[in-house]
Image (cartoon, rainbow, N blue to C red; front, side):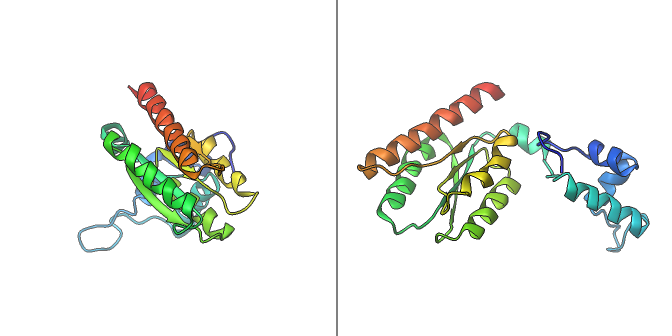
Length: 187
């Protein structure tokens, strides 16, 4: 596993697997002919080697055109329990402040299960979110966010305070500041 290399490319996989970029592209895109069968034959051992290297390097496909053209920001929101007063207020406040800015929020709830938290982080990373708001159900949860941070995805960790509405508003405001920084950097 390569650290500090969040954007693994087909070229990286090709170099590591000892094959051409075109072959990696062919295998990764699972190209089939009109008859539903492989258009070109690739030895199963070569195909498996490419897929193993991609998995080891933690390759995540990126649609560059979509990424360039996508204007709305997508934010993954991972909360323990939507019925909890604070997290309900937080979800509402995030929507209130981010929707007028053109953000799309993807919500996931852990039900206080650390394994579910890990899976949601991975799911949102695979969906190429622009930011994460994540309240981990365990003290080790911030370790799960390290992969997102290495990939340059800003993470906001909500903190409960005595005044739930003020805490929710502050968290949403931090998220907006981060999203505005991203927008400024990407122009």
